[in-house]
Length: 75
Image (cartoon, rainbow, N blue to C red; front, side, top):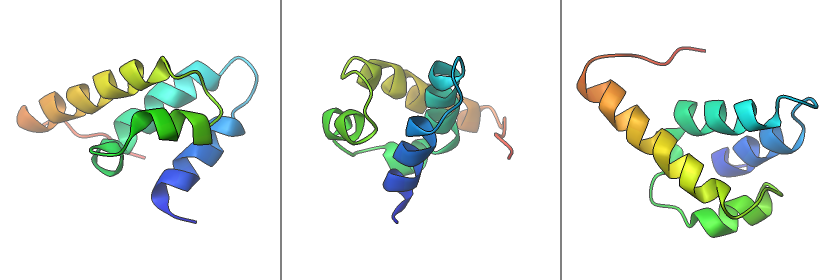
């Protein structure tokens, strides 16, 4: 299973009430892997609304900003 499929699986299997947080966390944690992919296709694969592509783009931008200032995402 490739990284994008693993991320989609984690989102699909997130606990009730934690799915949105999981989407944001996985997007932030795996921003490098998500950068440059077609997020409409990713959202379909992850079984989430297409509008989450915007949220994922925000997390990719946040990851870039955090990298620029030296902040790290762990675990």
